[in-house]
Length: 237
Image (cartoon, rainbow, N blue to C red; front, side, top):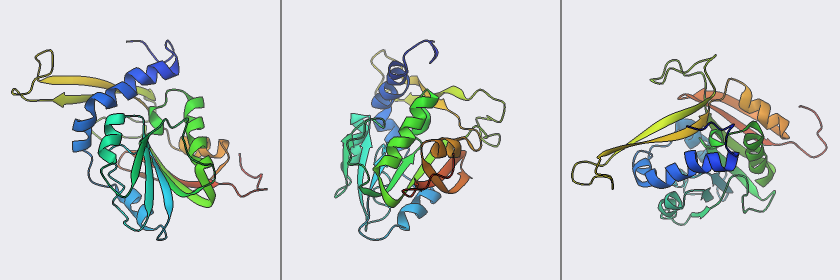
């Protein structure tokens, strides 16, 4: 299999991220229904009437956490967006994290849950963080989640010193009565992930002009709540 260094990043991600999620959308959605506690707490803490974004919304499982806010979701997968769009009154559109169709400085919050780690170069991951920050109003805040390198307690067993750019299998079983076109009842798809080491996400956020408000670790993920720096604040790196 070609590595990300052998293929242009957009083509590599198309093959190992976007095409995969298009094919597994329904199966993937059926396994994604329970909100993660930190994400749920973040959304429930928002003032009534808040308008924000779910960037890489998948099936829209976070749309219904807080009925008093309005969410515009986006995802590269048209099949996942179709599922997300059923959660009215919220809306979902097909969009790339690096080319968001939203007005800059408009939104009071944004969430990006397990999305940025699918971008295959440092420059593209940082650009994705920048796009999220640019959407926020002054005082608005974003919650970003990425897979952690430090997962020695999980079934995957990754930890410090392991390769950070990995392929993660998704096995889709259809059953004997509904085989895949090739006649098999099980198919494995390989998805690209960049595993973030401790502190790496915070570094990227600060590098792109953001300010880290809170940070932590939950369920093999690093998370950060961040905001745009106040105008005139040149501190930080």
